[in-house]
Length: 260
Image (cartoon, helix red, strand yellow):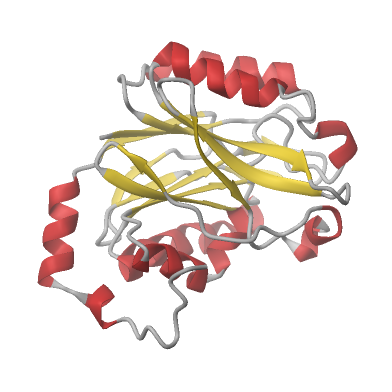
């Protein structure tokens, strides 16, 4: 299966401009029919705490993702901001199929308290899995990456491809690449990290979107400029590795709740 991550320099709180950036990058990347394409966290606005200004109440960004997935015949994952009943935001990753059907909706389990996210966004309730060609995919968002227990919960439920969409700042660059690699090794899974690049009003983001194989080997590194990463993922080598090195079978179920 082809996986592509689009590394955007998101224009601050400008939905239309960022939609155009996605289309431009898709024209250049030319994903194959059936490919999984991932966009960064809050790609249409940047990592903003201004929920009232950026939430997708009218459904413009969701309609854009649905339409683009159907027109390009791809699976498309993108970060959107919704509201819950209390008025707080929900930082979500939503996935649409080549038929233009919503196949997954995940809400970030771990809002970034230090950045004010917990004050403005409600945490998610559960791990999410969806099927994409032969893979079982688990989406996560940014700060989730620091909490290995939620990744393990996805792995014991069958995830073999993990996609982390993010607005991860350059000041903690080393943490980003190290933790992505660790999540791949410990869960014997492909891990894709799709980060934004460029500046927002507070921070610089150096991108460094990566694709890792289940041994933690780098398959793609986007560097720091706007662009994309891609790789062809093969399921059989992953299954062979899990069979020959069955670490997931040794997971202590009394320490992991598999039905998060």
